[in-house]
Length: 57
Image (cartoon, rainbow, N blue to C red; front, side):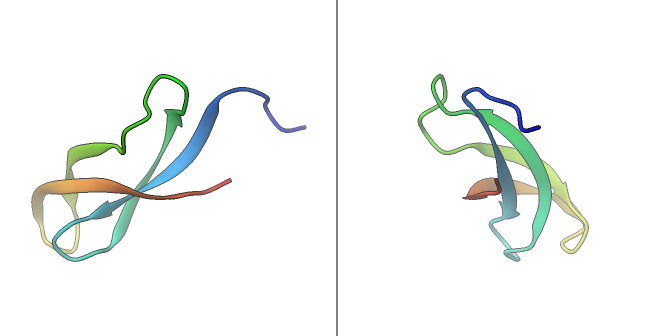
């Protein structure tokens, strides 16, 4: 059974190489602007800015 609520799954994509590295949850009611987090990218092998790309479910 699926969860009900205002949380959605989003993918985080590296801005340098455009590889999707992370999947996280976001509350669409409280956070209306797109997520931008500094995370580690395996392809770039350094910490880069990752932005929200698409809703996953």
